[in-house]
Length: 76
Image 1 (cartoon, rainbow, N blue to C red):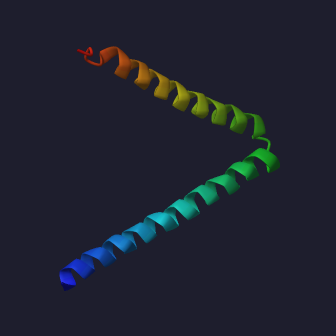
Image 2: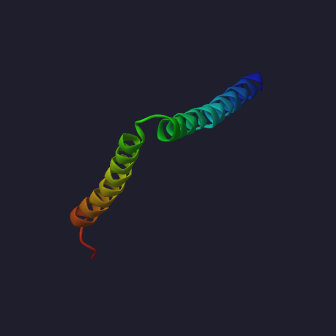
Image 3: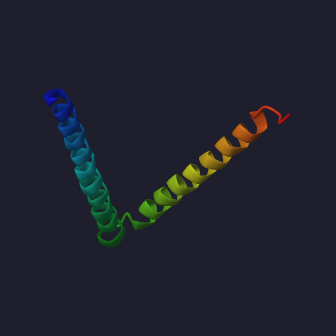
């Protein structure tokens, strides 16, 4: 019984650690992004880089969807 409790506690600790990471890392990047955008001379570069990343992610998803549809076996 204690082994089950230990594994449940370990899983809960791991979930809390992941939650803490998901709380801290995006907050840090948002603060860094805001600082670079508003208080440095790198604003245009930050905007361009952000747009390239967003468009790249969207195009990757569309390419993946197209590939999946094109290579899917035919329905019978």
